[in-house]
Length: 141
Image 1: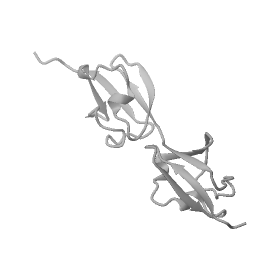
Image 2 (image 1 turned 30 degrees about the horizontal axis):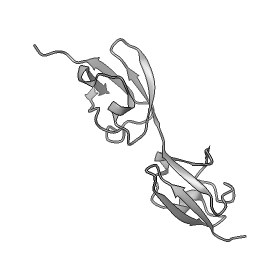
Image 3 (image 1 turned 180 degrees about the horizontal axis):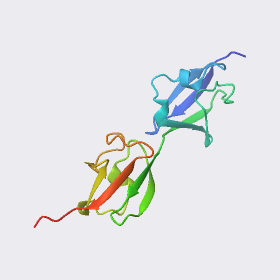
Image 4 (image 1 turned 90 degrees about the vertical axis):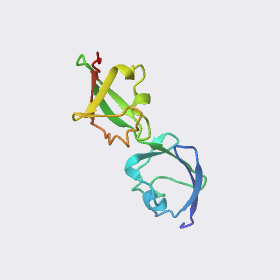
């Protein structure tokens, strides 16, 4: 049965769009303009492989697919040497990803370069595996 299927996709910002998919069409080909490396896509909470066809993914008309921005695993090292791994979404600001930090007291660097904590992971070029070093700011007397 090569009838097209009506599939609803919900983006991270809540916008919905109905797409048409042929049974033998790959999900990644059915939705042009998506940066697949940035997103995970789920149906009923189960992650789907966008390189699979509608049939292989058991997508029927009326299926709803939810897109989420993939999180990045970032390691932060505090001045006392303690390390912690946090998860950040590409559009999340560094200062929002690490609650409880008194930002006025710290500078944060990646590879020796100071970062602006009000910027997003994308703008700061943070990828999974990035290591951020926190230092206490020196007081000017």
